[in-house]
Length: 299
Image 1: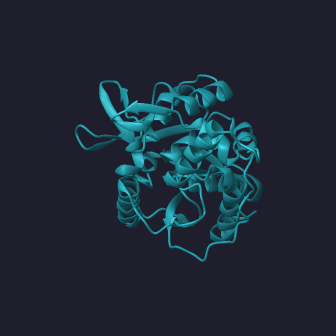
Image 2: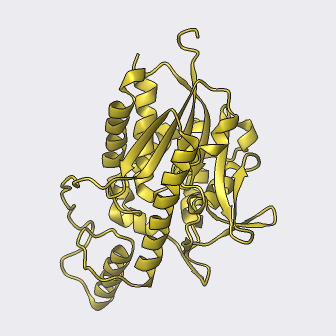
């Protein structure tokens, strides 16, 4: 095929903040290959990164997410005061809407599929038309964390629940290559990361400020934003770890069944689910792993 005309499909997986590594993988493809990304299927964080890239706004998103601090992450998590989820996710999505503008999936320059899970019938749903933001919001609705999304009469939650590495939607593509990204790779010796100093906390605090600080610290513990491990698990920990264990198992079966041309596996212990303040580190990690796995397709 003529140089510069080869096309590829991406299957981008679920895994919270580890999904930021997929930005690094896309950057590697842009700089080191002559393949054009023609199609993207994404679950959860993969749908978010893939949708933003398809809309041509990845530069803007990368600039924003790499500036986030721990406290910025906490401020973006808006309590739902609901029995169906801890957070509504509206604050995050409003930020993304302001950043990207409103666009329908059909109007994207490349084929895009967001995978969600219909919890009423227990099946995965491929969202290929309508609002890009609605599709992303449904795909990232992690059970017990974010509230479900009612869309076209269906109650939708995180696509990673049933399909954490969505290779299947790419089978309909007539591209030259399929690259899948799993965020459930084998654990590796973690890279030592210097713990940042507390941000914006005054030394002398009144009782109200102290109460707020205790609340923030407790929330950081719940969301895995503190580096120290207590060894104690509560209901939230058990549910989130159980979901992740299930997704890791499903991911292995899905990959074996569909056998993509290339598989990039980001270590499952690379970072915690909500550690978005480590965005630069995760993006660099994704670039590094892409360079290892995809060396044979370099220009």
